[in-house]
Length: 90
Figure 1 (tube, rainbow, N blue to C red):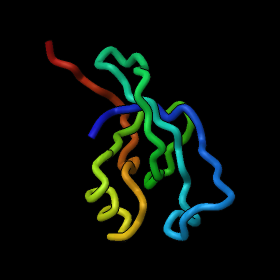
Figure 2: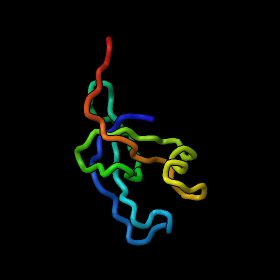
Figure 3: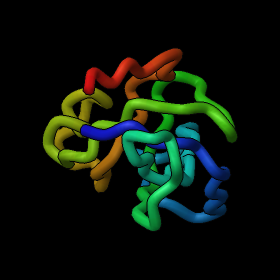
Figure 4: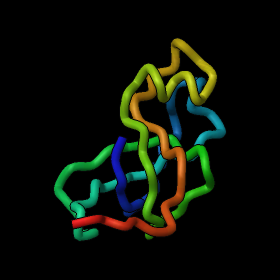
């Protein structure tokens, strides 16, 4: 699981049936100082996130499929929350 920032939408006119009617978002991982890293995922949006939102991403395939209700879905990452604030204790 990680915190990331939605940097765009992914549009696919032809996709697996389990992804029909699901929004795909391009998410870049964030460092602790809120700066973007080079790592990214294409994640299924389960919380109505949008570009610019800071989000919580579950990037473990089995758990992501359980959240979306399908064992045979070709899904690895799912957006499970929109993050309002992060408090890093030093």
